[in-house]
Length: 264
Length: 297
Image (cartoon, each protein chain N blue to C red):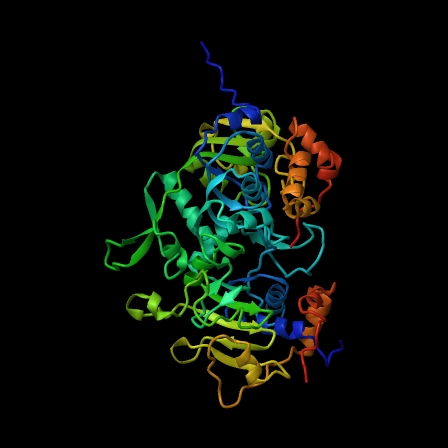
């Protein structure tokens, strides 16, 4: 890849970074390779005030490159053990980018199980922190396999996070500070910013059509008269991704065959 | 006449012999870090059964599940981190082998804190609007008596009969330090429990453990500790930093041992042994275990 071409992974990293653009001094937590690279990219380009951890118990002064390194060769600016992480997140100064197994039209996420609670067809991780995260701070998502199996027709099998389902809120009143952010997928960028928080198509990755996204989404999407194309990563961003954050190329393993970002 | 200080040193066999069928046991650490695995393997060798387990789960839960020791699991997740899913937990959960109380990680913390504070519950908004309440009908709501009059989850106290923890060093009286980067919620587990049993890398003299610099690494005071066992590499295959990292290769072998034959073989090799020294030897020996680097994310 040269500076004028970019991979789908690189396009998604740049879009993941965008969720932190206007967030100020919050803890940026990206789960998985591309969300983590996105957080690093945001910090190194347009939001230097972000806090980031090393995934263990320390706050990094600067994002570190993915892959093996000596455990203590990164400069740190603080301590962030799990107990403090909960203290921080319940205070709201965090924006997480998570990888749900299912998402519904209310922005409710599932990483717990598929099927029945007592005897699930597939036991996955558990609720983890999604419930507390969802009512405390903004949460965006990365979905590498945009399909109706992920974007389900009804509610997700186990509602792990609070979302925009009025039936679950007293009097149907959804608090103004509930923030389900963007959803970056392999096809498009979505959010829940339509009328009454309906899911909405924000942009299409180059070469992807509205029909393709609709067919891959189990619920209706609000689509504007003309949907913009997802902005490509800038040449500066590509240098940061390739040389600074992921010199070993772990991003190329996320999508099968490491396809180009522009699929025309 | 001057009294003699308590000596709380026990063997891991002594510790497990003090546990009873049906007890609620809290297990310290977090996923693949600082789990009291030597004590867990001791439980596997014992006739102990019908346990209610509270854990930020990793291979501790997987081993107990594979051995059929769990009656009920109270948890927020079970994960091997680098290998996201613990297959032993997964298979048992999918078979409906035990009851579950699946909670947000933060609710587990609050339940332990409530038990530690000796209050029946702590109010929290965590869990509202999710299926956690629907799937756990025993969870009740409580209304704020103040002007806001808002509704909260009344997270019940998670009282533990015993807590099993792995720490870095302890003296014979239970003065201990956790020198790894994150103490997790071991302190709450200890305070939520009637009895606290700790395994440690080394039992050393009090003056070696504690100094004015090191005192802040002490998670709790000795008066809540019931028993201590020296168990070098006692967290293996999870990490015991400083000292050794996560043994990913061992975890892969463990996670692949899911067929009845493979599990029996894993058990024979790594669980049904005469001593912890034997375990260290079959797990690779002290030199190899000490060379496992700390995890890097």
